[in-house]
Length: 122
Image (cartoon, rainbow, N blue to C red; front, top):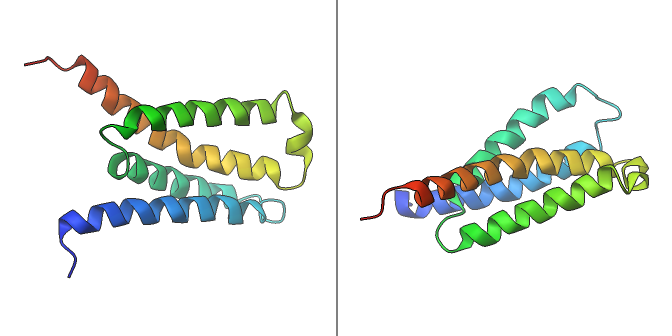
């Protein structure tokens, strides 16, 4: 039987894998089922929050936040400056879903890091 110490990292790992898979796979069905967004977005946000709480901490916080900023910049450029990418049938939906997944993780990690920076030092 898995202990709590072993279970939480595995939960975070599986939430990351499933979040990416759900973000990509459901993107292919948005054209046929536009209401799928109503069900997909909350799931991706929850998985993103779990990833932010369980997977990222310590030394990897700065690297994670840097990668989040890089992805946000790249995806926003793909959405505006390189608009032809979003016109390819499924690319826009994939980018939107991945952003819905990674942004909550980034917010959680950033807020936790800000809290640690602002906490009184002993």
